[in-house]
Amino acid sequence: MKAAREQPHPTPAMVQNLPREAVFARRIEEYLEVVRQEAPSALKMFQRCFAGKVSPRVAIKCKCMECVCHDRAAIRDCTSPTCPLHPYRPFQKDAES
Image (cartoon, rainbow, N blue to C red; front, side, top):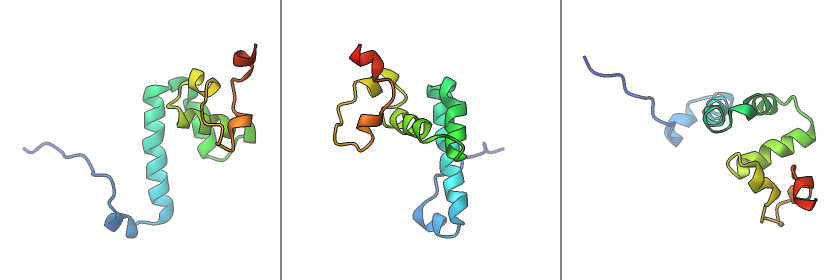
């Protein structure tokens, strides 16, 4: 018997035949798996964020955590002042104290 092969990531040709929602749903599931492995404590927050059930403050927190690979200290020490979310990033009070 041959071992089952993993499904490849969708190529542009494959994506053209899929509904847009299916492509986004697959990417969201792949990203949630990354969060599940790297930052399990943040998983519920990201699930709510992708479902559109969070406040703007929590959405910014999710975006910042995604940007710095789920490292809270890196958000506080962000070196990207040109980012439009920079003034609103979470975890700033610890750095200012």
